[in-house]
Image (cartoon, rainbow, N blue to C red; front, side):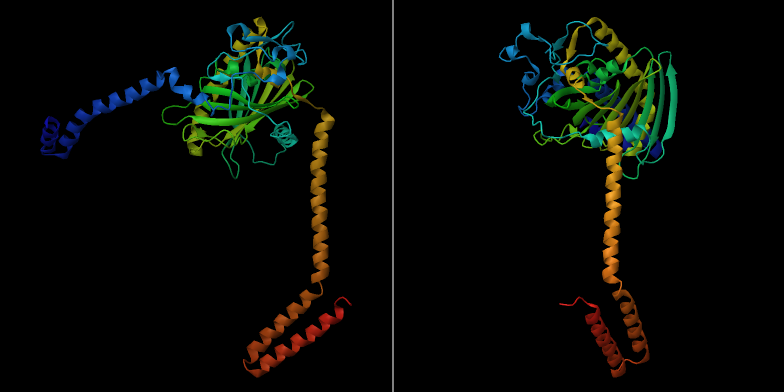
Length: 432
């Protein structure tokens, strides 16, 4: 009753200005307190609030893939602390430029990062040579898309950064960046981008990462990500296919959203289906150059997304560099690698002839399509060629007859012409 009386007294004020002022004096502090509570609650969200996202309907187990273990280790219990690291299988060819000496495969100790997999089918082709060709065309600016618009050119003592953006006819905005890192190798940069175990140390937006499937024959893997966003945007979920093609110490690294039917959709976090994020990594004059292409449809206004990217692009680039320098330090003193790095080192080896063959196959397909179209056009012309002039003449006669008389005369003329054309058609038709 006291609240009602207070509001009633405010409404008795003689002018509208006084009413608004009194209402603001009462409701203003309440609104500020509510906003501060939301902000503090987001910043101090407890860790257990995200633990429910780590379970994927019991399809993910806590054991590493048996295909990557020595036979003597397959029957051991990997749940105990004494078995948290495994001697890396000798069948995996490690990069000597990055790690020398004995290397240990480190299983994930992060509760939000799982090194588990589901049953896999090696015959499934989630990422194919078409994905390689698409990234190659993007790098060579031969993809046929619209012109890139320059956004920024920034640098630090150890990094040079450029960024572009374009709007395709359909789909979300697309982004491209080129970063040159001092004192870096393509191999270590490749490992850095693939290592989800280490990503938790520098990417504060990643709240969950798990390996869902692995295909050692091609080095392909499927990962499950959950990324957190500010309070005005709910978290997003991704199922991402990843594969690397190696060309003489240059790396075409493709990651894109792939459908995984046995990972059910949930209301929250929201699944992002259209996702593409790929790198071309190469050595340029003793430096490492990374060309990056990215686009995704998060389900929000593209104009709002473009504004957010413009505001945060340079900050994100600096955060990536800080994370990479920290990764350099850890890899220099550590002899352990994560399962993600094991998979990225199983890349598909190609050469320039292989890329050229992809281009020639595309040209042959285009030539075949042109030839088929020409053949079809010729056949249609042969069939219709005799009939088109007759149809035009018949239509003209009908128009003249109808314009002269609407009685029996016009009907007789039309009937006679039709009968004449019918006899001509039987004469030029195939003889039985």
